[in-house]
Image (cartoon, rainbow, N blue to C red; front, side):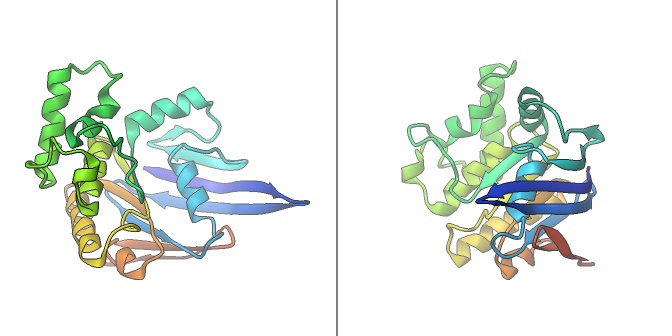
Amino acid sequence: MIRTQQLCRRFHVGDSWVHALDKVDLHIEEGDFVAVMGPSGSGKSTLMNILGCLDTPDDGDYRLLEQQVAHLDDAELSRIRNRHIGFVFQSFHLLPRLTALENVMLPLRFSDIEVSQARAHAESLLNRLGLSDRMDHRPNQLSGGQRQRVAIARSLINDPPLLLADEPTGNLDSKTSVEIMDLFTELNRAGQTILMVTHEDEIAAFARRVIRMRDGKIEHDTTRH
């Protein structure tokens, strides 16, 4: 599903260049559940942004679903994001004036799908994620865990083959964090490919593969059997 070769990203800081990614080779298969870890400045967020088509590398090759995407323009990257990638963020990014159902339906607003069909799909996802009785609630009427479940449902509304999660439990307590990670595990068992950035070992333990980065390079890549 994902293949990078010699991926590089540099940033100009003061009078010098910082190598956020330094010749990164990475291969992720369909159905993988991968956690990316590393200290601040290790390159994990830069890697996530490039894999999510939110940024482009300075050098190297990135192929997503066999398509070369490393040097596409913004419009083409946007099309790939909308079709192939679902995003889950630490801070949920829900629109406060919309209900849970309306937030989940939001990515389909500019698609060709009929409103009734989009609504049925969103309702099905919210039911699946245990929010059947919260569909008409706005974000401020939901707990942190419920808001993250709404965000996960929204990320899945386009049936993306790849789900990217950036510190998905960062704003949650320990019990709720485990519940969200149990949900990710369930999604992965159903075939969803998941790539997650986290700084917590206990959260990374839910993944089947853990990549540790340092100074823009992959330091360790371990698969749990």
